[in-house]
Length: 420
Image 1 (cartoon, helix red, strand yellow):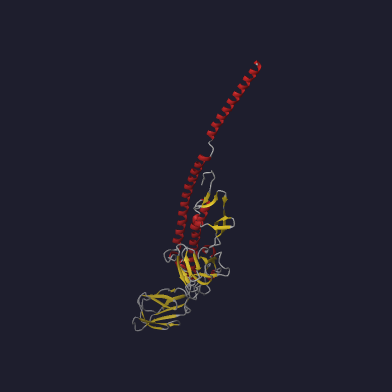
Image 2 (cartoon, rainbow, N blue to C red):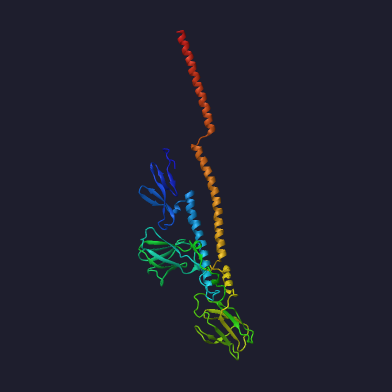
């Protein structure tokens, strides 16, 4: 901003002064107090350091970098991490419901990173919290802040400042939970805070935990069969394992025998909770669930017909659990059951593409504005070469005229001296 005495004051952002008269301040990159992993901008005035809110740095290369990080980069990393973490967790859960070539139930296929927890710079070094993910299906792409004001413990979603609070120290028995993020332990003093980033490292830090292909649980743990001597048209489905946790009696043999004479009832024998079970009413195609395994019988069983559920001791040609792993691709497992892996990834790619196009247009507009500004400055303080050339000619002619006058004066003076 030009002053009446010709000096120029310099301001940045929304009016923060850098040069005012003879007083100067400088910009410096410092660690963000709330998130020391990130750098932010501060004004240095002598020995004092004043942090500038990122929202006030709105223009230029610096403003563009800050805006890109907060509006695009961090959100994109969180979105991609959420997809990766949810994919890994859902595959792990389904993989544990299958049986591998060794006859063992499946293990975790992937290792998952824990939420990243960042302590504020002003926190005590001994302060700490324990954060984890309790429900992967409701994860968002936001960061969270856990704080303590001396009375209440608060967990806040930073994207819209939605929060939950409790006056009880969070623990495993009484966690503080929001959007599937749970704080289960806190050693924290009043006015301290932690930033929780549950998904930011999801895509970077997941890893395959199985190196032996024999441990891929592609098979189902049980087989269902109808006795060859059955006289009715009843059929039994292959069945599926119930969601985790696994029942300890999952692979205990079961036998279903329909009453003779036939009365629409059957008995179930075997080991497990609620077994043996007698006088079970038959319903065509209805779920039958024992020992954490669910199957259906359809058709018209006859008196004395027998159906069995036995351990899958020869599962080398069985791919039932592998097929169920493939089905996960089309299931709505993200965003509280509203998106698949593919749709969530497509949305992320679309957002990045739209943002890229938006920035291209903005860049062109700013470049045109820069050209116009430079022309405006040149019109005030710049050099016009045509005008300067004309002035040089005018000065040259004036010099020549002055030289001619001096020459004439010398001639006249000499003449006067000769006749005197």
